[in-house]
Image: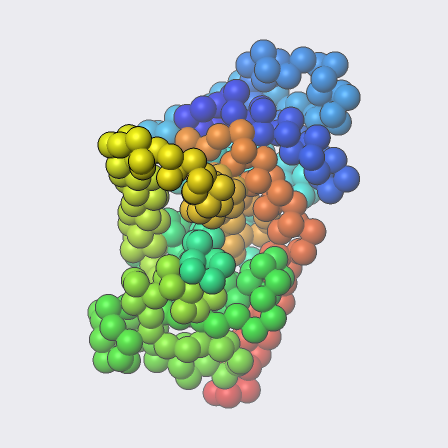
Length: 334
């Protein structure tokens, strides 16, 4: 029940999801039942099939992830992850403290066998549709082997959830040549190029290639990915604001805007993070989706849809299976 707009936006998003996707998912709200009850009466919750699990604590956005998780075992994040670990729910969604969600997932669920580090995956709109980018915030200190596994996990997600049969993989770098970039980038490039499996790695991609949709999956370290994600969000807001300001400059512009209103609406929808819901945390033993801290009800609803898709496709089991196969290929090749 975390997030800057909680509990109202979270509860409303849950209500919308229960109403729109009632055949595909059942919602369990974890948090202060009194706060939830202000926006969702018990009779309405029963009608929609929404279960409420009461918790007495919460983890603030600025709190230490590890300390708060260990001390606040009755927080919505800790209890929600516990429910997932006990398989009483099939997925967990949170707009709360990202570090706390990652920590709780690692300590409460554990990593999938063979996974070195988990990664947060996000959807990025492109000229041709969308691409997947990971990691965007779970790790700031990354090794080449971690990036190699991110590529594998991204490929599995692209195939299973995004429905891309043979996704192309690109490594984010400052140039296309194999000699470009840091020691980390060069070592990761070598690993991805020499991998024994059919990873469909096409090489290095630059920042400008992300929005072009040059590849289906972009692999990077969590520090770089998070900076790109936050920058992209600010650019969208700046462009929309600039267009609005210009349209107010003359009556002619305003009349033109009326004619182009459907076009603006479609473009804004494509660029709006709320349409994509949340970002899956891949590599932990369970389906976890992390939402933007300022997520609206619409974003929460779509995040629940993303979580349901991941659970339905058994994304964690498929990642475990693919990593097991990859390890076998390496042993045979070695």
